[in-house]
Length: 138
Image (tube, rainbow, N blue to C red; front, side):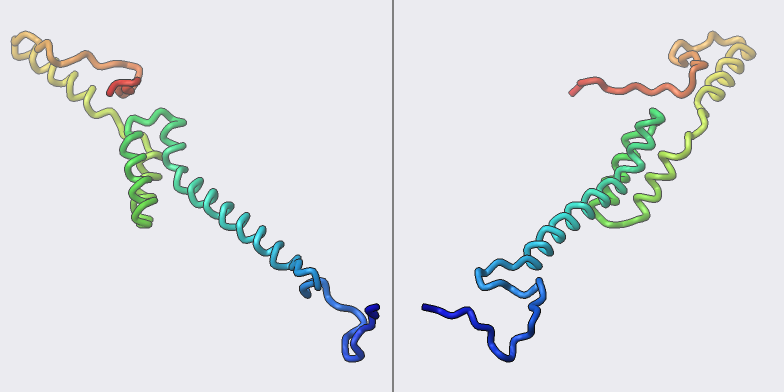
């Protein structure tokens, strides 16, 4: 018959982080779970931060959406923050439509010169800059 006596040098209270006799280590288990949650959380935060320029450009239907995406991917893979800053700047600013005024000037000068207006100069759209999304084209 075994007796459950405590060693005379043992303290009256043993802290909870001390490994039990059955081998269960509560502190190690808690720190393992905390470490896994921390690594996954930091990964989600990092990837969410890198997707900010693309989400900005997609929300505003930006004409340079592909350029913003490429810059964001370059920033992600090279860890060069200059690419990410460039992606934010491109996504944040709409570039002015310079083509429509130039086409109008070209048409007016052709009319003044007495030449027929060329058919390959398209009419300027009043709705804003023209861009087309490729829907499912390969």
